[in-house]
Length: 304
Image 1 (cartoon, rainbow, N blue to C red):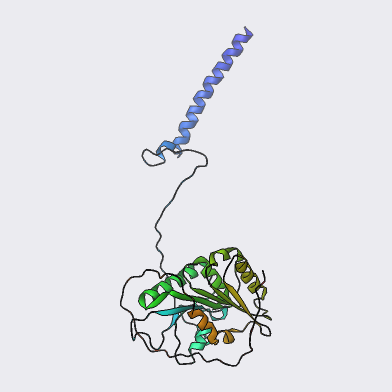
Image 2: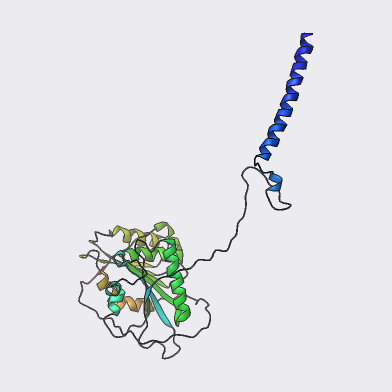
């Protein structure tokens, strides 16, 4: 008798629980819960848990920036294509407000160009905004977009595009080249450094590193590490050290005719395709390379 009463009690409890669960489920869905069968597209099967998915989207982004551009005196007299040097300035020449820093033309390669005469390269000098770095993704993308625009507008030999920079620009030289290893025919980082782990991308790009042995801003160990790692990976690299100089070696670097003779010998095996458009001619800028007396550098082997 007791057993029958207990069984009846359990059965009644189960029935009550079933009705309670059904009421709770209906209430939950009425309170905003989404039926998985209705969550996806028509015919799509929704699986719970962790699953693999693919994604694609088209993103359009606009870039705006300022730059200095040098054209050789003989540019535009014929259909000749010219080599281009992309120069990245240091942190002291950054400026905001969409302006060109007043000292941008007075440091590094632009300073050499200001001395008058002729120089056998097109030179592109982007302006880095205040508070930014050349390695920032938006800035590096802006520089490449700027380079693309100049290559479309002017008669550039895209087999001979060279990248150089000093201090912050030396770091930017390594970073931008590692991101775009198939774009540059040679690199000239001056007083810079970078990520050694990405140097395997630059094994086919000739590199000439310059650094001051007494540099307190960017220790020379940066040059040894970057050059040494690239050398171990089979890269074509040379390191030139100024034994008695510190950070400010760029006048000696950018007035050295041997540097430009070496650059002229470097080129990529094939040019990138570009649209045929009308070229711009200009003889507004006259520049020269004047070698000023400077301490003779010594070439040291790169540490492995």
